[in-house]
Amino acid sequence: MKLIVLDRDGVINHDSDAYIKSKEEWQPIDGSLEAISRLNHGGYTVVVASNQSGLARGYFDIEALSAMHKKMDDMLTKVGGRVDAIFYCPHGPDDACDCRKPKPGMLLEIGQRFNVPLKEVIFIGDSITDIKAASNANSQAMLVRTGKGVKAEKILQAECKASVPVFDDLAAAVTAILQ
Image (cartoon, rainbow, N blue to C red; front, side, top):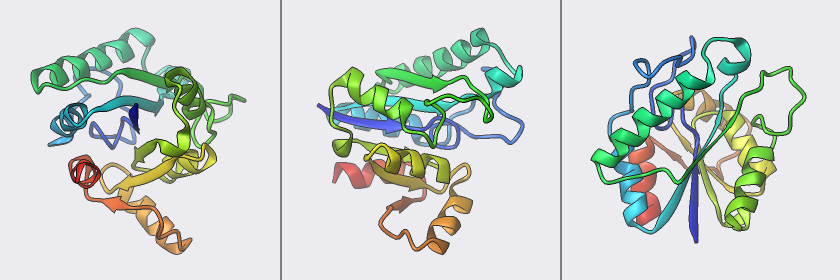
């Protein structure tokens, strides 16, 4: 099985420092849904791994989160794509959980559920937290410049971590993966 894991906010949809709190606020980044469809048609199983601390902070509830994911699924269906599973951490940054990125718990669970060694899995994110989660889970990291990606790229450059491929957006990353 070819498995790829995507962060959600800033990779698939536009991010906000005020959090994405409703299906109306959830707006895909141009080309991201088509990129997921291309991965599907290229034989990839696509999974989302996302910190959703807005739940713990009371900014939105599980029904609002489910509505956002339904909107994403419906929009993906229209372009011939799908996400096979969505994993999320509902905890806040001060909670003692193992699933909140950069901890590897969410990615480890994905590897177990899909019975795939994480060293064979690409994780595409837009933040240093995503890159560290991939590293902590021994998966392959890719960074996109959308969302928080430009800031993350500067941090990577400062830390001399040039081994992480960087792309303008999910569509560009997917083009490289499928070549």
